[in-house]
Image (cartoon, rainbow, N blue to C red; front, side):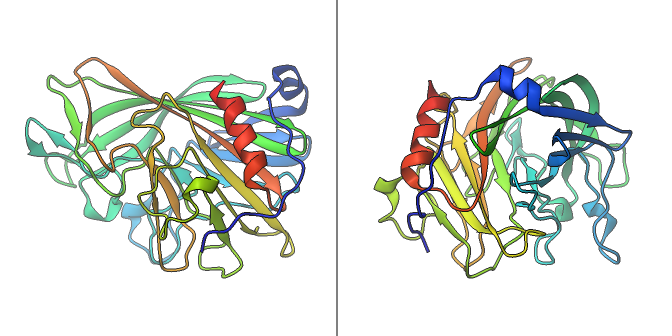
Length: 313
């Protein structure tokens, strides 16, 4: 169900100086974490994280963000739901690929055993962010053979805390080293950015898109410059939190179409190729940009629209 969210005061326009003073980074052999004082913001996984006990180890995965937290500390992303073990917090992957007119790996559905994504190296850390390199692997000679690196990806993540909310900026350049283009044919799911929330299936959860799109039901395949989801956060004693994902207007096919479910569960991703395909030319790169704003409570469409305009500018 789509509905406008109750209004609260929203400030916008991130301030680098304030971000530097309030955000810190902690790195271990397994993770990179961004913190606001003693409050966690997000954790990126350098090392592989296994699925629940008894689940096929094909779902081991590194190179993703989980958990993400609301300012008060509640968790707003989920991991390894029992109906989609490959859903892992905040991540992105291509589903439908082609190389030299032949079907290529599926980097999203790990259970198909044709492709996956892994963390490769930490390129840089900053007071309020980090840059990592990830590899998109294809099992071109079968799951038991050494995988081939298809794409190199540079993921930039920076955070700021302003006006009671946390904002994370994600930029994803991808580059191929192969002799021919890698093509991404149209597909309903192919993430520029994907999110699996902890309140999946919670009847108190809802989503909102820009006001002019509210009449469209279901929201799947709607073009939206931003999407906001809210509901009870985990480990927050039933308190609500809002996650708004803003699509940069310079992204491919912006405002991009979205993928949602119509079964009452809150799942979302931006799909750069839902209507028209895309490709990466040999030796070239493509870039996707998004901003994620996380607030305690619920936020109104007017305030999120203001944030999107600040991001656009």
